[in-house]
Length: 320
Image 1: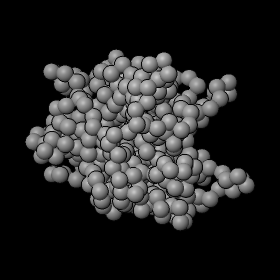
Image 2: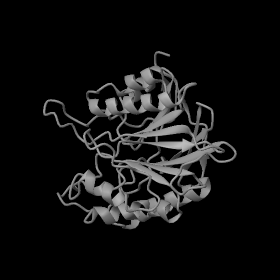
Image 3: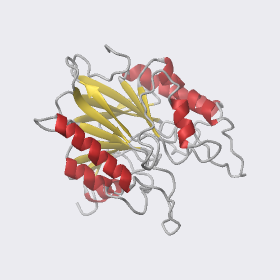
Image 4: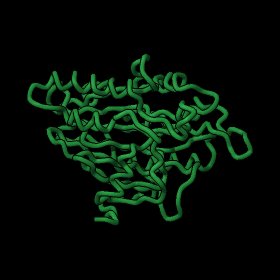
């Protein structure tokens, strides 16, 4: 990479991203160290150009007895990303619902993120919902023009509306921000749109729609825990036509992907051991490979036992 502050396609035209999600780092105990070992294995096997943490990197929630086992959220964040930072791999982050439940705000946690030499995350606009709404260009292999975009959005934590229970959602002002960014990048591209992908923590309702109505690939062992309402982010993606795939976490025992109206919806593979999982469902990561001048995304799983899973089980909807 010619510049340490650039993301760039390799000479062979590829750009490989590892997605770590739901690490739930707390106190550096045995389970956290297992999470780190899993990340190290994935990084060594895949040698990615970029790493994306899609939320719940640390766990600042209460335990069943009311205590919080994450005494130092800043140190937990440093420990959780250490495997990536120590390898000098560029990385980004979007926050989840458990990162800032107690003892730290999103702004404070982002300040800690920005202290890292290889963090490409940005706080994003201060006048819209969330911390960490930003877009990263990936430059072409042999030129200094953007060849792909990585959109990163803060999907929030919990609904702030008393009459709407459950999780938060990507808000109207964030959707408008995405539309503005997308239009600006389109204006620079006289002959079309830049292939783009998007990262956030909480799945969109369309993830459930994909499973219920379309052929999907992978596993669904729990409900799609989307928000009860939305502000039209998926519709905005359809209108703009630039984002070809989205990647989320949140639901630890779902790892499937499907396609709705030409947009692929991918779950990551839960990485952390210090949280719930499922017997026989190893921790791991999703690997994403972009190819310059192509809109298609190639993706597979790398599990903590070292195996690579390219062919996930096919799921056909009941009415299919």
